[in-house]
Image (cartoon, rainbow, N blue to C red; front, side, top):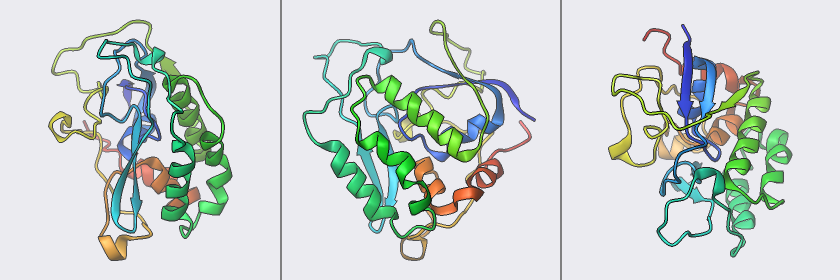
Amino acid sequence: MQAAEIYLSTACFGNIQYFSKFVAAEKIYIEQHENYMKQSFRNRYEILTANGKLSLVIPVEHNFGNKILIRDVRISYAQSWQKSQWRALETAYNSSPFFEYYNNDLKHFFEYKEKYLFDFNTKITNKILELLEIDKQIFFTEKYKTFDDDFMFDYRSSISPKTRQIKEDRMFEPQKYYQVFAQKNGFKANPSIIDLLFNEGTNAKDELIKCVKQSL
């Protein structure tokens, strides 16, 4: 059973829960009319290293406390975050089974300078869907919608690194898959989709589908 439509925020290398929605819904809407939200997956992602989870942040230009639409948020290149983050990815995943297979597809995002965060995220998401062989068109909201509390297909805020914002997701259940450092650190659920891709490769889509609960 698929949901007719699901609403998501933009995300940078979204986590496994985020990408599970692309196989759980007939239609995916990405919100483009919300205000930028700090400390969210809109500009951060979590990878798994020998020392556990590592949160990587895409720096953005500050707006001095004023509200700004997510589409207008600019990426900051004041520091060389691209080099340091790619180095972190290499260190974490160079021994994973599919790093050499996919690394050139992703390295590009750490070399060129995209102006806007929203565009950067959209290109990343489309590339990940292509690598996962998920044929799903992304739609963008035409205006900001508000939903009743009982509307369960709005994940714009609930897929979050902040524990207090996370809500029960009746459509998602993490499943164990191979992870490089699982023997040392134990299995870590729901990191960035990068982790699933580098570890499971051509099996990643099937592993993603396993995470989707079919009954609502």
